[in-house]
Structures are given as C-alpha cells and as structure tokens.
Image 1 (cartoon, one colour):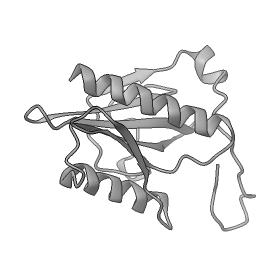
Image 2 (cartoon, rainbow, N blue to C red):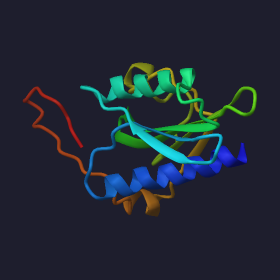
Image 3 (cartoon, rainbow, N blue to C red):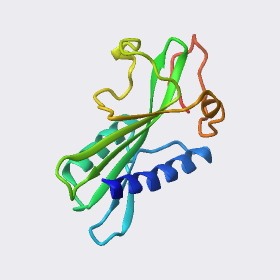
Image 4 (cartoon, helix red, strand yellow):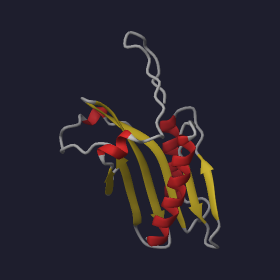
Length: 159
C-alpha cells in the first residue's frame, strides 16, 4: 500500500497545482502500470458528479490493468457556517487484495450528526482517513476560487 500512497501523493500534488493556477479540478484517474509507467486520464463529463462516477467505474473495472490507481476530485459539504472544501483521494493497489483507501482533506472537523446527510455532495463515499487543516492552513489555501450568484438569482454556483 506504500507504493499506492506515493502514487496518490504524486497525483494529488498535480491536482493542487492545477487548481492553484485557477483551473477547475476535473476528476482525474492517475495510475501506474505493472512496468512502473505513470499515466493520467481526466474524467471529462458534462457534470463533475458524472466525471466522479466515471472515475469510480474506471477504478472498479481497471481497464488498463494498472498495478495501482488513484481517483482525485474536489468535493464539499455544506455546514451552517458555509461550505467546507475537501480534496477526495481514492486510491487502490490492485497487486494486493482489497487494498483501497479514501482520504479527505477538510477545513473543519465536526461531530457525527452535525451535518445533514442531504447536505453532503457526492454521497456514498466512505472515508477511511481524514486530514484536517489547521486554521492557518485553511485560511492560507490558495487553491480556491469562488464565484457565488446573488441569493435571489437561481443558477449554478461555480468555483
């Protein structure tokens, strides 16, 4: 699982680099072949949720017969204090039986039950590891770019 963790770090750094330049984080699958070659596919779809679903399907099917793979996407939960951004990292080592881990980087940890399940975007994710940012790290995150429509207007909220 250590090699899968290294692969996850490599592609997570790429994801953070992309969004720090102002790009929208398109869900991506990074994988390593049995020969050690690292490749990446972006899951382009009309909606981000569809791209995440395509990435999960890719991870389940392993069409490239990868040794290890990682799915990385941006998600958030809505709290009373506002949105909390999370970078989700789902990694899988196909050389080991049942070796799959999901990691979430979050700005704020809350107690179980504090979040309405209907407020969680991209539900159905089981997270095994959580990395909480310190208040200073959360305030200094340079990877977010928010554009919010006026409350009376109906439309899409984008970042």
